[in-house]
Image 1 (cartoon, one colour):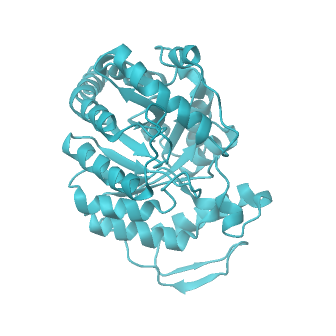
Image 2 (cartoon, rainbow, N blue to C red):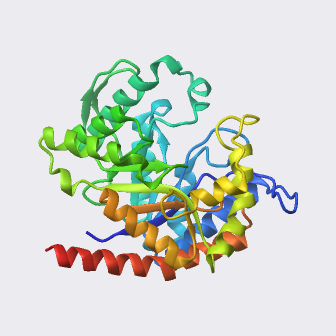
Length: 353
């Protein structure tokens, strides 16, 4: 199976720690579409926009940004990363992403997740005590919408649907639906039982952090009768591709540290990240995908061997990195890193056949 490489963004609005400049929402949304264009031009496979409902992000409506990206790209797949499904209406989610699928000629995907940021729940009138139940029920409805139309369905948190005509339909046969998992064993098991592809998020920590998560996922899938080895797993991690190892770390650190303090979880309660801790997270055994093109390629190949992942989505630019440096890293990821990884994964698969 070909190894796919992509990028994602949440469109955070963070003051530049080096210049003190603060990007406008208008500039950030335009930057986001330009990032999608460049990713498409350099041959990357996936472009994702995440969802946050706070004034320090512009990603409150990922479907709109992805629709704009659909009109400016030709080949790259367009995904949410993630759709906070528990506070969304699955009917509307389907309608939006099916429309993106039509605009893009079949390139839309959905990564559905519970969401580590919870501001959308009170915003849309949901009780956080129902957090887990909301996700389970709404994922069930979203999958049902994908499978059949018209649809009759009943649940706890919304009015029933009776012979509901939910349109438009996908441009092709279907729209891929992944489940975003941050490491919760219960989430991994339920995703495996459903036979859905799993998008693993790794913020900080050792590269081996999710070994048990993946084991539980594949075991649950096999027990439910799915072809567990064939199920797809992706790794979603922060990173930056520089000219050299030192260049990558020096460029990424001040912005990543600023984002961890200003944009990580609730404002005013960020995570202080020292340079030694950051450098430790950039070593071969840790999770960040930061370094020279060869270093990043080596780490992606290590993830492939460790977890059997067939996709990696890199969140670059976190913390308001200037667009020039961000685009340069996207270009290196597409033109220097991706060919190394794809060729080596293909070679491994031929050797194993």
